[in-house]
Length: 112
Length: 115
Image (cartoon, rainbow over all chains, first blue to last red; front, side, top):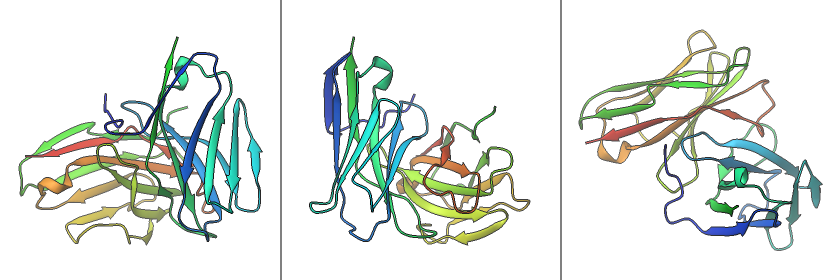
Protein backbone atom coordinates (compact mmCIF):
# COMPACT_ATOMS: atom_id res chain seq x y z
CA UNK A 1 0.00 0.00 0.00
CA UNK A 2 0.88 3.66 -0.07
CA UNK A 3 3.25 5.05 2.50
CA UNK A 4 2.24 8.49 3.64
CA UNK A 5 4.41 8.44 6.71
CA UNK A 6 7.83 9.35 5.35
CA UNK A 7 9.59 12.02 7.42
CA UNK A 8 6.54 12.58 9.60
CA UNK A 9 6.66 13.22 13.33
CA UNK A 10 6.07 9.86 14.96
CA UNK A 11 4.47 8.93 18.25
CA UNK A 12 5.17 5.40 19.47
CA UNK A 13 3.02 3.97 22.26
CA UNK A 14 2.22 0.63 23.82
CA UNK A 15 -1.17 -0.98 23.43
CA UNK A 16 -3.45 0.19 26.21
CA UNK A 17 -1.68 3.53 26.71
CA UNK A 18 -3.41 6.83 26.12
CA UNK A 19 -2.12 8.78 23.11
CA UNK A 20 -2.07 12.52 22.57
CA UNK A 21 -1.51 13.91 19.10
CA UNK A 22 -0.95 17.64 18.77
CA UNK A 23 -1.54 20.14 16.01
CA UNK A 24 -0.79 23.84 15.72
CA UNK A 25 -3.02 25.83 13.41
CA UNK A 26 -2.46 29.22 11.89
CA UNK A 27 -5.81 30.67 10.85
CA UNK A 28 -7.61 32.23 13.80
CA UNK A 29 -10.68 32.75 11.57
CA UNK A 30 -11.24 29.01 11.11
CA UNK A 31 -14.69 27.90 12.23
CA UNK A 32 -14.19 24.16 12.43
CA UNK A 33 -11.28 21.90 13.29
CA UNK A 34 -11.35 18.29 12.20
CA UNK A 35 -9.26 15.18 12.77
CA UNK A 36 -8.75 12.55 10.09
CA UNK A 37 -6.97 9.19 10.27
CA UNK A 38 -5.19 7.71 7.26
CA UNK A 39 -4.06 4.10 7.18
CA UNK A 40 -1.46 2.97 4.69
CA UNK A 41 -2.93 2.55 1.22
CA UNK A 42 -6.26 4.11 2.15
CA UNK A 43 -7.90 7.50 1.98
CA UNK A 44 -8.33 9.64 5.10
CA UNK A 45 -11.18 8.73 7.45
CA UNK A 46 -13.10 11.30 9.51
CA UNK A 47 -12.68 10.91 13.27
CA UNK A 48 -14.19 13.92 15.01
CA UNK A 49 -14.72 17.65 14.59
CA UNK A 50 -15.03 20.61 16.92
CA UNK A 51 -16.43 24.06 16.33
CA UNK A 52 -14.37 27.09 17.25
CA UNK A 53 -16.79 28.12 20.02
CA UNK A 54 -16.07 24.91 21.93
CA UNK A 55 -13.07 23.85 24.03
CA UNK A 56 -13.63 20.12 24.20
CA UNK A 57 -15.59 17.43 22.44
CA UNK A 58 -15.70 13.73 23.18
CA UNK A 59 -16.37 10.79 20.94
CA UNK A 60 -15.92 7.09 21.31
CA UNK A 61 -12.45 6.66 22.86
CA UNK A 62 -11.39 10.03 21.46
CA UNK A 63 -11.39 13.55 22.85
CA UNK A 64 -10.49 16.70 20.97
CA UNK A 65 -9.27 19.77 22.85
CA UNK A 66 -9.10 23.23 21.33
CA UNK A 67 -7.02 26.05 22.80
CA UNK A 68 -7.68 29.14 20.73
CA UNK A 69 -5.36 31.30 22.81
CA UNK A 70 -2.31 29.45 21.58
CA UNK A 71 -3.92 28.07 18.39
CA UNK A 72 -3.47 24.49 19.47
CA UNK A 73 -5.55 21.41 18.82
CA UNK A 74 -5.06 17.97 20.29
CA UNK A 75 -6.54 14.53 19.81
CA UNK A 76 -6.52 12.18 22.75
CA UNK A 77 -7.07 8.47 22.13
CA UNK A 78 -7.87 6.36 25.16
CA UNK A 79 -6.66 2.77 25.50
CA UNK A 80 -4.81 2.85 22.19
CA UNK A 81 -5.08 -0.28 20.10
CA UNK A 82 -2.87 -1.64 17.29
CA UNK A 83 -5.68 -0.78 14.87
CA UNK A 84 -5.16 2.88 15.76
CA UNK A 85 -1.77 2.82 14.02
CA UNK A 86 -2.05 5.34 11.19
CA UNK A 87 -1.15 8.88 10.16
CA UNK A 88 -3.36 11.48 11.83
CA UNK A 89 -4.09 14.83 10.19
CA UNK A 90 -5.72 17.88 11.65
CA UNK A 91 -7.70 20.05 9.26
CA UNK A 92 -9.44 23.40 9.52
CA UNK A 93 -12.06 25.23 7.57
CA UNK A 94 -13.88 28.54 7.66
CA UNK A 95 -17.55 29.44 7.88
CA UNK A 96 -20.17 28.36 5.37
CA UNK A 97 -18.74 26.77 2.29
CA UNK A 98 -15.00 26.57 2.53
CA UNK A 99 -12.39 24.01 1.76
CA UNK A 100 -10.59 21.78 4.23
CA UNK A 101 -6.98 22.78 4.83
CA UNK A 102 -5.00 19.85 6.12
CA UNK A 103 -1.99 20.20 8.39
CA UNK A 104 1.10 18.08 8.53
CA UNK A 105 0.41 14.57 9.75
CA UNK A 106 1.63 12.65 12.75
CA UNK A 107 2.29 8.95 12.52
CA UNK A 108 1.02 6.91 15.47
CA UNK A 109 2.65 3.51 15.97
CA UNK A 110 1.05 1.18 18.51
CA UNK A 111 3.02 -1.81 19.72
CA UNK A 112 1.16 -4.88 21.02
CA UNK B 1 -22.64 -0.27 1.67
CA UNK B 2 -20.15 0.58 -1.03
CA UNK B 3 -17.76 3.40 -0.32
CA UNK B 4 -16.05 5.79 -2.70
CA UNK B 5 -14.15 3.96 -5.41
CA UNK B 6 -11.42 5.24 -7.65
CA UNK B 7 -9.81 3.83 -10.76
CA UNK B 8 -7.19 3.06 -11.72
CA UNK B 9 -5.48 2.56 -8.37
CA UNK B 10 -2.07 3.05 -9.98
CA UNK B 11 -1.16 4.88 -13.16
CA UNK B 12 2.25 5.30 -14.73
CA UNK B 13 2.50 7.90 -17.47
CA UNK B 14 5.32 9.21 -19.58
CA UNK B 15 5.91 12.92 -19.37
CA UNK B 16 3.63 14.65 -21.84
CA UNK B 17 0.89 12.03 -21.82
CA UNK B 18 -2.70 12.81 -20.89
CA UNK B 19 -4.33 10.86 -18.05
CA UNK B 20 -7.91 10.48 -16.80
CA UNK B 21 -8.70 9.47 -13.23
CA UNK B 22 -12.16 8.27 -12.31
CA UNK B 23 -14.14 8.65 -9.09
CA UNK B 24 -17.35 6.86 -8.18
CA UNK B 25 -18.78 8.62 -5.11
CA UNK B 26 -21.19 7.12 -2.63
CA UNK B 27 -24.61 6.94 -4.27
CA UNK B 28 -26.72 9.99 -3.54
CA UNK B 29 -23.87 12.14 -2.26
CA UNK B 30 -24.28 15.69 -3.47
CA UNK B 31 -20.78 17.01 -2.80
CA UNK B 32 -17.64 15.72 -4.47
CA UNK B 33 -14.08 16.88 -3.86
CA UNK B 34 -10.73 16.16 -5.47
CA UNK B 35 -7.45 16.42 -3.56
CA UNK B 36 -3.79 15.94 -4.40
CA UNK B 37 -1.55 14.30 -1.80
CA UNK B 38 2.21 14.39 -2.16
CA UNK B 39 4.24 11.78 -0.32
CA UNK B 40 4.43 12.57 3.38
CA UNK B 41 2.04 15.51 3.13
CA UNK B 42 -1.60 16.17 3.89
CA UNK B 43 -4.16 16.26 1.08
CA UNK B 44 -4.41 19.56 -0.79
CA UNK B 45 -7.74 20.70 -2.20
CA UNK B 46 -8.12 20.81 -5.96
CA UNK B 47 -11.78 21.26 -6.82
CA UNK B 48 -15.37 20.91 -5.55
CA UNK B 49 -18.64 19.88 -7.21
CA UNK B 50 -22.16 20.22 -5.92
CA UNK B 51 -24.11 17.81 -8.10
CA UNK B 52 -22.93 18.55 -11.64
CA UNK B 53 -21.88 22.12 -10.93
CA UNK B 54 -18.20 22.82 -10.36
CA UNK B 55 -18.44 25.48 -7.67
CA UNK B 56 -14.79 25.82 -6.77
CA UNK B 57 -11.73 25.08 -8.86
CA UNK B 58 -9.38 27.39 -7.03
CA UNK B 59 -6.99 24.58 -6.10
CA UNK B 60 -6.28 23.33 -9.61
CA UNK B 61 -2.55 24.00 -10.07
CA UNK B 62 -2.64 24.82 -13.76
CA UNK B 63 -4.86 24.85 -16.83
CA UNK B 64 -3.57 21.35 -17.57
CA UNK B 65 -5.91 20.08 -14.86
CA UNK B 66 -9.58 19.69 -15.68
CA UNK B 67 -12.40 18.01 -13.77
CA UNK B 68 -15.98 17.18 -14.69
CA UNK B 69 -19.05 15.56 -13.19
CA UNK B 70 -21.54 15.76 -16.03
CA UNK B 71 -24.44 13.84 -14.50
CA UNK B 72 -23.82 14.68 -10.88
CA UNK B 73 -22.45 11.28 -9.94
CA UNK B 74 -19.21 9.92 -11.45
CA UNK B 75 -16.39 12.42 -11.78
CA UNK B 76 -13.25 12.44 -13.89
CA UNK B 77 -10.06 14.37 -13.22
CA UNK B 78 -8.05 14.86 -16.37
CA UNK B 79 -4.43 15.97 -16.49
CA UNK B 80 -3.06 16.99 -19.85
CA UNK B 81 0.61 16.90 -20.84
CA UNK B 82 1.64 15.37 -17.52
CA UNK B 83 4.80 16.63 -15.83
CA UNK B 84 6.97 14.95 -13.20
CA UNK B 85 5.67 17.33 -10.54
CA UNK B 86 2.18 15.91 -11.12
CA UNK B 87 3.30 12.65 -9.47
CA UNK B 88 1.14 12.24 -6.37
CA UNK B 89 -1.85 10.39 -4.99
CA UNK B 90 -5.13 11.87 -6.23
CA UNK B 91 -7.94 11.45 -3.73
CA UNK B 92 -11.64 11.81 -4.32
CA UNK B 93 -14.10 12.42 -1.48
CA UNK B 94 -17.86 12.77 -1.31
CA UNK B 95 -20.30 13.97 1.32
CA UNK B 96 -24.08 13.69 1.59
CA UNK B 97 -25.34 17.24 1.44
CA UNK B 98 -24.41 20.63 0.21
CA UNK B 99 -23.48 21.83 3.69
CA UNK B 100 -21.70 18.78 5.11
CA UNK B 101 -18.11 19.71 4.52
CA UNK B 102 -16.42 18.42 7.67
CA UNK B 103 -17.08 14.70 7.27
CA UNK B 104 -15.95 13.69 3.84
CA UNK B 105 -15.77 10.07 2.71
CA UNK B 106 -12.55 9.43 0.86
CA UNK B 107 -11.72 6.87 -1.76
CA UNK B 108 -8.42 4.93 -1.70
CA UNK B 109 -6.81 7.27 -4.22
CA UNK B 110 -5.05 6.88 -7.54
CA UNK B 111 -1.28 6.95 -7.38
CA UNK B 112 0.06 8.72 -10.46
CA UNK B 113 3.72 8.36 -11.34
CA UNK B 114 5.03 10.47 -14.21
CA UNK B 115 8.32 9.28 -15.65
